[in-house]
Image 1 (cartoon, rainbow, N blue to C red):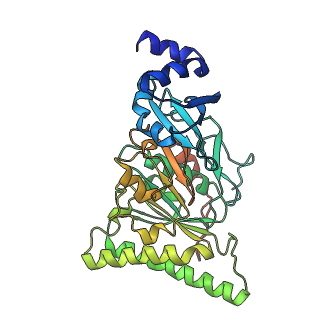
Image 2: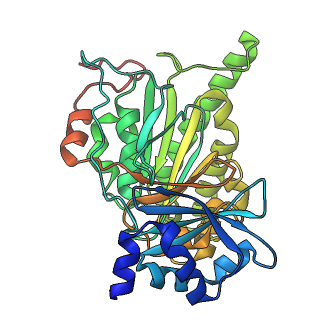
Image 3: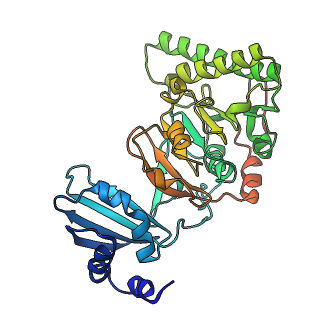
Length: 364
């Protein structure tokens, strides 16, 4: 780090911006406001012609060198083209923070329709959301923190009442830790077992649809009779991979139909993949997935396969830290860091006895 760049990190951005702008050949950009962020600083600029936000996109590398930053992110104002902000990040991630204790004080299972605490944003503020009736997609390359992101959702679901979990884990790793909490679980890529589980879930969807028709209702809240049923698939690309081409195609079709028909009757899915590519994440199924979480990706095409084009800045996901994700619910994506879920918390939740009893079954 040069002496001048060290000075820039110490001085207010209002003082350093004019010299930085001269060095990189950026004119007609005036500082309006500067605020600190958890990762660095955010500089709000007002642009005048001929300078545009596109010029800033071309100069992000020069800006990063000038400020000795880990990353520069350009954010456009959705209402005015002449207003833009530059996020100067001196670190790429806040790092893992342990999932807060959200359990009920007397150990009772929680309302599944409550907000789920997911992590913290770049300002260190909590990020949460309500997911009952929502399909979820989690994708990222190996080592990006996908398994931990899945654990965050499983932790909230496992601690909730009237939630039935079903899983398909071709890799036999992540979901095996939660075995005691699942009402149905396929470990491995056996086509027959996978098809049997998916067929049973379709039976549940049909039963609930008939119930709503007879009741003259369009909404089914989670109850003991009809719990919120969540199918968790830990590697979408490997579902029924041990079977023939026909058997794999049948399993893929059953997943697509479940996603299409289940949401209205409280049957949802969490699909995870470490191969975020268009041949794995088909567009037809993706459009039905309400919430999409993209962790670190190899390139923008992988990120687009998860989030769809136009919802994010490509620089947000390339080379980011473990556990940092972009979350899109159909609109512009927001960045945050997933909480960390430890093995001891998994053991605590899987031994809690929250799993709904099946027909003829009595839980302790």
